[in-house]
Image 1 (spheres, rainbow over the protein chains, first blue to last red):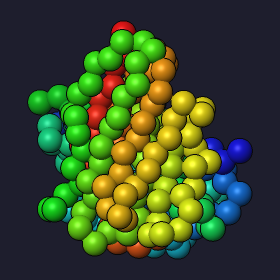
Image 2: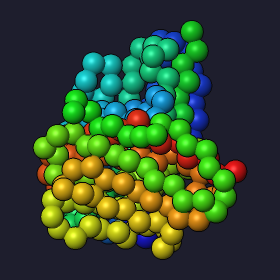
Image 3: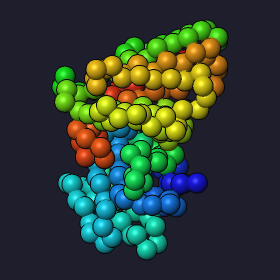
Image 4: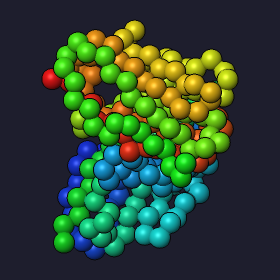
Length: 111
Length: 114
């Protein structure tokens, strides 16, 4: 069974801290890994990673994929209260058109 | 439209009743997906439509769930004889073609079965 596991499930930090969110996966036929931010209902797209070792960056957020060890990390530096959200990791299975999601990490940034 | 539109945004129904949830994808997007998110959980795939091809229904949890997509645009997810375990947020997403490039989610319908 295809599985995506995120850790930690919940994280509370102070504004200005750096956080690292983890995503590991066990799937039959990997194509890509995606990160989403979910603040209320609609997840919004952050990154799609297909190749190992290539860092994707957007402002204070960055992510990298390790296809040998089957995991990805999402880093957020100099966190702000607006970064508070649930961060979802998902894997696209080659040959299927559906994403398999992890449980999410609930990140809370305190001022 | 500018984004994926879902209605209603909230629905409270009595156990045993049927409900219909609607999704209006981004104009021109040929791929449409339904997901379910139970409290504190990740998203669970339900069904996928691509153009005129037969839908992938492999995620539908029981035969009480069905979905259709008329004219390659609007989709309706129907849950018959609702149960309390059906309570969840139902999210719809669309993309320009198969795959996830430009995969955009709607704001979802929060279904509560009492």
